[in-house]
Length: 100
Image (cartoon, rainbow, N blue to C red; front, side):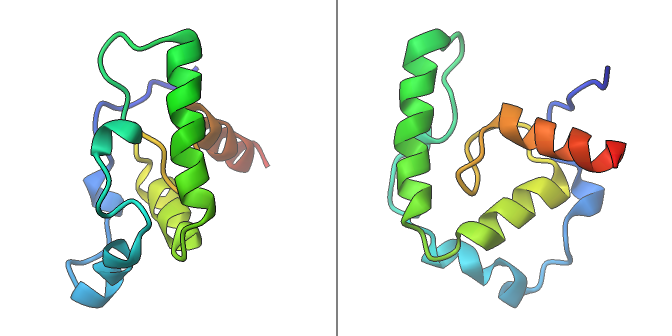
């Protein structure tokens, strides 16, 4: 079983070139409260699932969903909904990729 890091692996981050990060300014989430995408401490069960579903709905209408998802997978974002994927969904995808 792999241990989930507390922070994104910064060694996997691309260089700080503006063009590489420009997609974030076009995200459907840019003006929304981050609490929709990142769980508060001790949130569990139905409340967490409902919040994640609301976040995913925002993502599904987003023009940069692919870039967001790719970023989260590349740097292994440990928290939040990114590109309509939850933390658990990203871990599953990454695990499946490493098993292939």
